[in-house]
Amino acid sequence: MTDSAVNRKDNVRTVAIGSDHGGFAAKEVVREYLRMLGYTVIDLGTHSTESVDYPDFAIEVARAVAGDGADRGIMIDGAGIGSSMVCNKVRGIRAALCYDERTIVNSREHNNANVLTLGGPLHSPEALCRMAKLWLETRFAGGRHWRRINKMMEAERRHYE
Image (cartoon, rainbow, N blue to C red; front, side, top):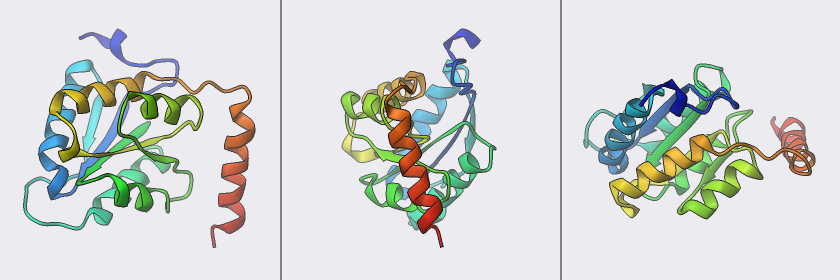
């Protein structure tokens, strides 16, 4: 596909992606699909099915997004739960564990999520690709949702230490 497939309104051009060993196969599929769509993908590992700890990779994905190295991030582990918890420890990250198209759209339109976490083995490769594409293309609705995002970020500022 051409550059026109890339979500330009939100300036999503670069996506950091990571996984643990349980999400490795899914990460490989999603990574190549996103490249095919025209995104620049930063693969932060893991690079095999050898047992690793998901927090190590989730932190790297979150840091890439928080530090402006990537516009958004996707982290895939066995269920997506632990990675979501870890990513949300990084200041400025709004990671969302999503499991279907409805939660994908809500995470972006209402919560302006900047990291998506997925349970790789819980979905088919086709479903994972559809969800990743939809998530990257869904825009934050703004409006009344800004008030909630601002409260979320204020809570982070007050309780970060």
